[in-house]
Image (cartoon, rainbow over all chains, first blue to last red; front, side, top):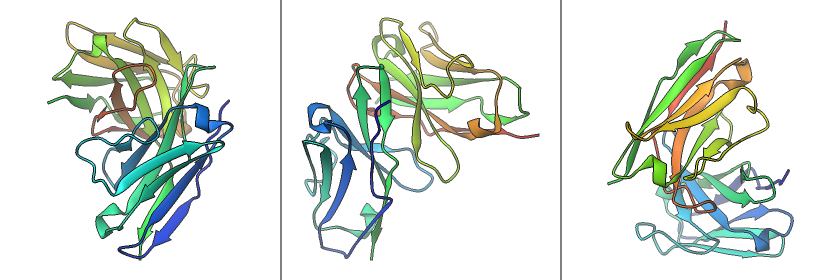
Amino acid sequence: SYVLTQPPSVSVAPGKTARITCGGNNIGSKSVHWYHQKPGQAPIVVIYYGSDRPSDIPERFSGSNSGNTATLTISRVEAGDEGDFYCQVWDSSSDHWVFGGGTKLTVL
Amino acid sequence: EAQLVETGGGLIQPGGSLRLSCAASGFSVSLNYMSWVRQAPGKGLEWVSIIYSGGDTYYADSVKGRFTISRDGSRNTLKLQMNSLRADDTAVYYCARSESMADAFDVWGQGTTVAVSS
């Protein structure tokens, strides 16, 4: 089965840039989605199809995907960006969705 | 506005059964791809099952043969029948919508909690 690997945690100072990676075999050929989950809340999509952003998500959020790594970049990080971030891909070989293990973003 | 509301969670003994429901508003569950996703306490998201708009269903290996996903178009509701429940099925269960097979989950419910314990 397809496996997505994320760092368990990322810490960043306010105003700086956070980068959260998602590793998978040839993930660059897949459609990657990113979700943000705050404690006690359902996840919300922040990036879809690798680099597209929903209209209600700030431009500070961006995504890229190439080779074996997809990356979520959050510029000018704010305290409200804290929470857990998950990457997700559709594994067409098994008709299964796959989530990464999640990355906890801490704003110092 | 598209919304999802899950119900049916609770405390159940190991080996027992439970049925979750997910009521949709603002869109048709029959015309979309509907999934169940769960999150064990303190853990990450785990995809559980999906039903395609055409009716095909797929399951994570961890629940295959024990869980059944279905929908009721007349009530615009998604369901998850869970049998032979185990302690490791304890989680918050979310229903979610994607508009096509590989689209992101753009609508999520608030979740319903299932606790399997004796």
